[in-house]
Every structure is written in C-alpha cells, then in structure tokens.
Length: 65
Image (cartoon, rainbow, N blue to C red; front, side, top):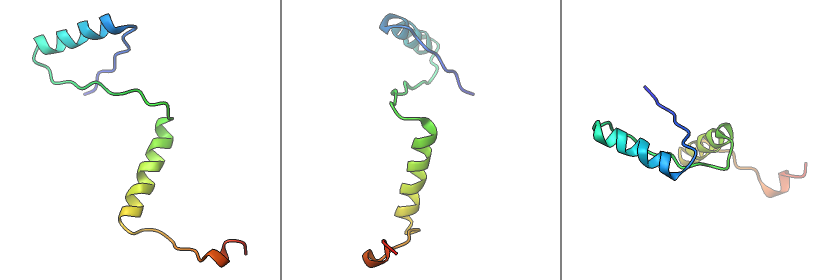
C-alpha cells in the first residue's frame, strides 16, 4: 500500500510525521525531483544496461556515415 500526502508547509509535514511515529507506522519522506519521473526511469534503465555491459560501441569514424 502507498500513501501520498501533499503537505502545504513544514508545520503540516511535522504533524504528519508525528502521527505516523505515534502509531509506529514506518514511513519515508521522498525528496522532490525537478525531473519527470518517466525520464528518470529511462535514465536508470540505461545505467543498468551499461553496468551489465549491454552497450554498443561505435567507432568514431563511423559516427558521420
């Protein structure tokens, strides 16, 4: 299950945190990203492919053909 909250200010955020802590509910606070989530997924997929060696090497002379 997921709960997504959009507190308007720091006070609301502290109330939400206190509520979850009081009920001993595990939670995490996600950091806002300036990037589109779909774009981030594509970059993460590409990084994973590169780390697995799933890349194509193109000779410098062949780039302009």
